[in-house]
Picture (cartoon, rainbow, N blue to C red):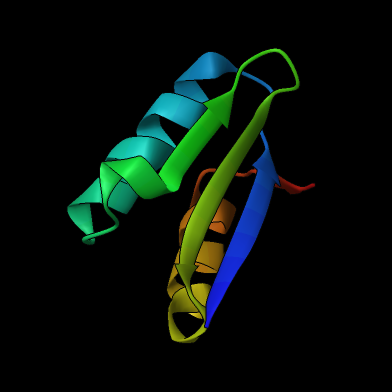
Length: 65
């Protein structure tokens, strides 16, 4: 089952760097969405990968959205 994780970023660099890390761990680019207007990054992943993505969000200091 898939789950969507959302993170709030303050600076565009946070979203860019987070996206690069997500791709590096194997998340497909088409499962990563950046909404610059609302400063949100959304990732659609299998539920078992949730912890890994949360750790990446924490590393980039993204707030929970």
